[in-house]
Length: 260
Image (cartoon, rainbow, N blue to C red):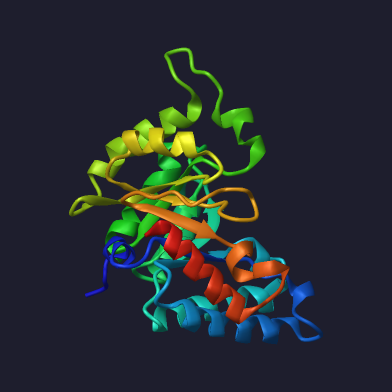
């Protein structure tokens, strides 16, 4: 039986490695170097992270070979028993949502996918359904790390509160139906750059994992707490702005000391 993503993640240190490859940093044969560097980094950090988050856009930007490379690295992570989050922020309705869910959650059982909630409940339900069937998880965007997130996510509602709070409250209801013990397969993305909102959203989503991107380069700091998954991409994948295996291991150690 496939291991539950939630159980796998919670059994590990609460640090997520974000893989956002930049070909310009990898010499004259970038795809080959990205492949080798990434696999070496996954192996080196296997005991120090709870999951690997692959940012699909950076692989898609490299064309068909880059997209194929992402899938190869996902398989490599699973061979190392590392939980996988595909950061693709998918969001669509009907058969398209079902196809996206199958593409990532069904293809890689026990893995997770980030999704956009702004097309409504019928855009989310196919992802929730397949996550249940595949022992995976769905990370729904609630309060994202970028400075411009407030333009829409902080819009005041006539009833009360703001838009991101309404999204969190909707997810709380759905999360109760997808519990895996004390935790749910329905999780949320909350930027590490908004520490006040992390605490508030944790109160609204007491049984959901919270993925906290933005650690390091974007200015976010380590946030301690049960079910809080601190995610570092450039700061951990490219420490010092370059591929550097030894420095990445050192940086992961520093993050884990701060999280202890």
